[in-house]
Length: 77
Image 1 (cartoon, rainbow, N blue to C red):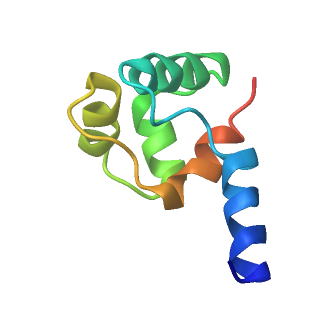
Image 2: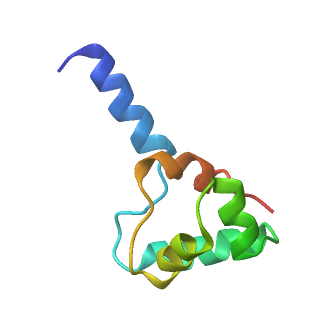
Image 3: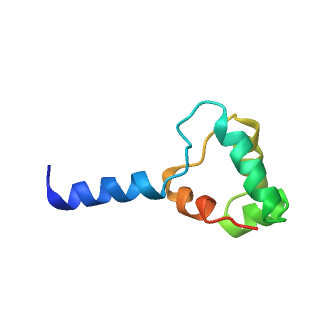
C-alpha cells in the first residue's frame, strides 16, 4: 500500500463516527444534535443541507455521506 493511502485510511478510521453500525446512526445523530441544543433546521443549515435530508438521516432512511462525518463528529454541547 502506498504510504499516503495508508495515512489517509488511518485518519478516516480515527476521526469517523460509528456510522457503519446498523441502527446506530439514527440515535447518534439525534443525541449529538440534542446535546448541541440544535433543532433539525439549525443543524441542516449549519451543514448546508435541507432539513428533509437531516430528517431522513435521523429516521434511518438514508445515511450521511463521508464528507459530513467530520462536521457531525465535531458536534459538542
